[in-house]
Structures are given as structure tokens and as C-alpha cells.
Image: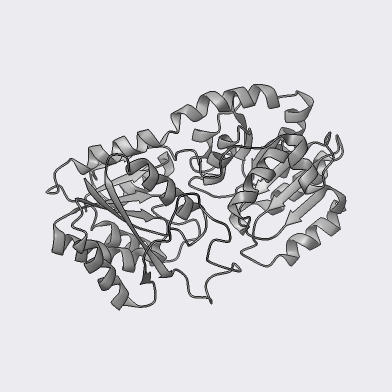
Length: 381
């Protein structure tokens, strides 16, 4: 089968680009796969990060054609024509926010009209965390060009079923991020970061926005320090003003217990942060899912998370980590204390090693092949 993918992809950076690289590598043994990506993903005015391009290298990955400009509709038609010339049997979009709906919906329709291919949307989100009045309209217009869908959590499944009657879809959990390779020894990782070998260390990883709840975690760290010493690593770029977080740390008097690495972490450095930690913390206030949990699982790290979206589907309370109510620093602090005082790391690590077998790329590839083999006559909406 010939497959074309339109998405964020290398040399652009971030979790979705990493996902597409892995998806391509797992599809390639059985299919011919081409990828088209953005030459401008976000206008600088709307992009809060420092750079949109990957700093490091991806092993075996070559830069993909950069065609799509979200601000230039002419490029959407160009990308559609380019995709159609590949004569794909299947066109895949990685969909995560309505900002891309006009471009993706146009490309899908142009490619389908010229090539007759099927269209599949892999949905990280159907509706975004931070919503505007037009989100539903834009998303429905884009996704109506799809013949089938893959959702990766029950919360996203629910949103899809609210938009469409009887869509053709499969629920497939987000696979583990293998792209960062294996971890390194904990002692070596901590030495690289200037941490004591015997310290209790937890990790908040990824870009920082309000809905990710770092401010709640900082309050929880303060409360945890009443029972035990602890170090929090914050590794990721701030997508909003960093100063309020720095001010909160100062007010709480926890500067000695929080280490901030406020830059995008290159691929080759990711193993160091996860290997240095005892557990990864996802204190999200709102979410559908998080690829960070799948990165943690890749490095066999337990996860302490809040019960939002599909996170409790991935993190099994008492088996691979701990799950608490969102927006509760007290419950999060109690979970941190429990994790260390009950010495849960070894038990949860064994649980992670077993549980992550469910999050294989083969499951995703099989679902794609199954959906691609269905009739294009069944529409949504």
C-alpha cells in the first residue's frame, strides 16, 4: 500500500514530529511511505517557543519536503497536488488542534479529488484543551474529509462521537516513544545534571503551559518537604511567561529543591533527564492524553499523574504509578510522600515493564491497515 502522511515531521521538532518518525519506521517494512510537512507551522506571533526546528538529529531520518504554510492557502493546494502525484492508497493526517483544520481539510479534499485515496485522521485531540467558539466548526469541517479515524484515549473517542454519528474509527492507545533509545545508569545521569546519587528526584518534562499544572506541583513540593527532602527537575521550554513560576518558587522558599532547565531538550539529552529521575509527574489540570507518559514508559519510569482525560487509562493506580485528583496540591504531595516512604519504585517499575507491552506500534499499524481496507463509501457527519 502507498501511504502519504501530512503532519509536523522532521526537521520540525516536538512530540508529534517524533511520533510521525516512529510511525513511518513501523509502516515502512510493509508499505511505501512518504511524508509532507510544514515550511511554516506557526506564525512567530502565535508561537511561544524559541525555535520550531529540531536541534538534534533523528537516527535514520532525512528531512521531509517542507510545503505547507498555515498562513498561505496556495501552499495547501500545492501540498494536495503533491500528495496526489504520489498516488497514495491512504492519506494520513496527525490532527491535534483546530488551527490546522483549514490546511488539513483543504489538502485532504484536493488529494482525494485527484487520486481517489482514502483519508485517515489520527487524533491526539478532537477538541483542544483551550477552546474558542470556532473550534468545533473548524474541526468538524476538516474531519468531514476523513473516511476513518484513530483516537488514542476514551476522552478523545467521546469528543469524536459528539461530532459525528457512527464514524468509522478504532481506539488505539498511544504507543511508547522509542525514538530516544535506552536510558543510562541513574548515577551517571545524576552526575551529568549535578545531582546527588542518593537524592529523591522527580521529573516534570515537556513544554510548560497553564493547563499542565506546574504551579500545582510546586505547591505540592513545598508540602512534601515537610516530610522528606526532594528534588524536582523541570525540563522543558516555557510556552508562557516563566517569571510567575520563578516568583512562586521564591515565595515558597523551595529554590534549593527545584532545578529548571528552561529550553527545548534535544533528543540526545532526553535519556539523561528520565534516567536521573525516580518518577515522572504529570500534574495536569486538563488533558486528553500525554505523550510524556509514553516517554516515561520507554525508560521504565513510574508516573504520578492526575485523573484527567485518558491519563488514568495509561497510568494504572497502584500498578504503574499513582493517580490523584487534578488541581489538588495536597493529594499530589501525599502521593509523592507515599511513593518514596513505601518504596514503590521497584514495584511500579515492574508494572511499567509489563504494561508498556500493550502500547506497541504494531497495534497501531494493524489498526491503520484494517481501516484502510474498508470502503470509502461510508462517510461521517
